[in-house]
Image (cartoon, rainbow, N blue to C red; front, side, top):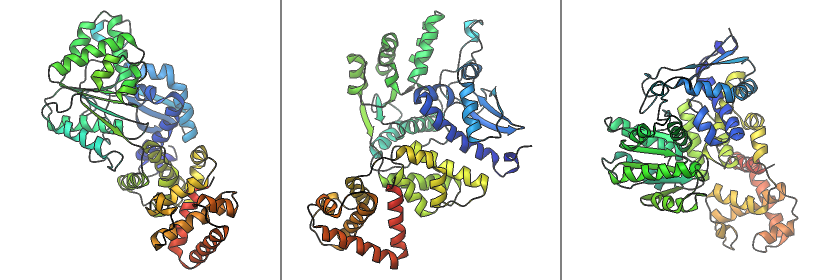
Length: 459
């Protein structure tokens, strides 16, 4: 009996730790490889030092064990020392909701072609629904377009092309579309998979001289969804097949949905005729996150996990981890898993201790401009107002806060800081520093806000 198994909700804790391990694997192997081979893994339980995982097919099991088994075990041991070994088993393809379009399982190269068919589609994440997607200004257009396509009986925009940086929600929206169609139009045949898996399916069809079956599988669906289409850039033969598949589907009024890290015109090593096709329908981009959106994501995540996270911790994380949503959620997962396992409370100090490595990787030398930007976000004021000569209270106070933080968090002199605020005199900066110190000593809530800002900015 392990220590972990005696704790409440140990299965949920393992899933939380799996998120942490996943982040390490994505960083080490790349997102495309992770999505294709490791994302389908599910954590079952930990018993007598053996962590049991499941995969949808034997093919995936064999590939993962042969290529990523050691890395998996290494990162699991780092996350949870109780793990001594891993066991991977194949989950029944009959499990409800595991696949959109299940086919026969792939076993080994020695078997006949009919026996080696792998599931065409990729596993869907049940958490990635429209209901669980936090909408804000950076992603509202892409969200609206995705929902409209999912609700439509016939193609409105063909193709729908979603693009944006890593961890901003493209895959979430792709899964959400698939789940919605599966629920509202269960009779429609949908295939969702990564571009890498599409390529592997095609290469295997060529190897076994079974391209006719491949074409039939992909050109007869009602909805084809390809994630990370940039991966086929430079793969001439795969691009050729994808080009013809795309045309066949669009010509027959079948919906095509794709995602990538760049707009169609910016995709590298992609044929011009294919770039043109990808831009035919609606191109919707997802912009980098804002503070408000990150805070909303954290609040939704904490609510779904049924944990009480202090406001100051939420605000600190929303400020400090601004790269992408995936990293932000991963940080919250780590904090909750840690405090649950060791019995500590969630505080700012605990958060900084648990996320020391992550925060260090995000650290960089602070500038006065960085501080000004953060203060503007926090108080919801325009940079032009902060640097102006306007004397309204809702502008003066943030300006003084920015000056104060510039003094305590940078090595700039008072005259140098003053010059960064539209050439103000050093005495103005000194007055601001003293004013913020005075208010902080009397107003606990104001002092807490300053502490959050400081912690989110300091190296």
